[in-house]
Image (tube, rainbow, N blue to C red; front, side, top):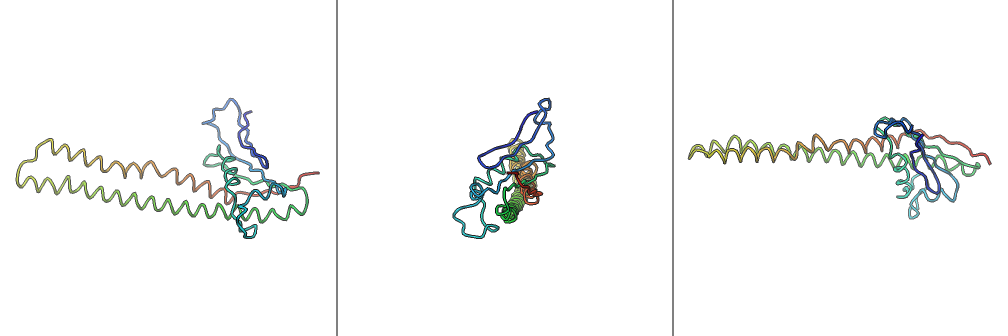
Length: 204
């Protein structure tokens, strides 16, 4: 078995993949993100400059990066699980605020990503329509105007054809091939927001 995942000083996440299975062909169904409520570790989950209550507090960059590193091997249908552990009842009281803070963080991130995606689509469609308008001018109106005065040289006509394809290529390329990164990030943020949270006690 090959062990895929991440580990740092306070939490760890592993996924087992058979060595005989190529990485690109492996299907990872579940990824566990292990979190500890130990107070020496817990304080590192949040931005120390944020005075808000724990459930509204901003997550630290390091903690968010840890979560993203844990799911680096995830696929489209991979399920995420937060496994929160505690050693005593005092630490257990922080489980719910931590869960709320995580859900809130990735919910806001999903909203931001979706807004960026909508902006991307809007700008791409505007660029496409502008390009189509220029092509219509080059291929329809301009030849009619020039033909009324003199015959268009074949080289100029070919140049207009090439120019038309070039100006259309960029918006078509963006609309066809550049959607997936947005959809992938939105899907990940959505699954991290809605991931099941499992709370368990660590025996002393």
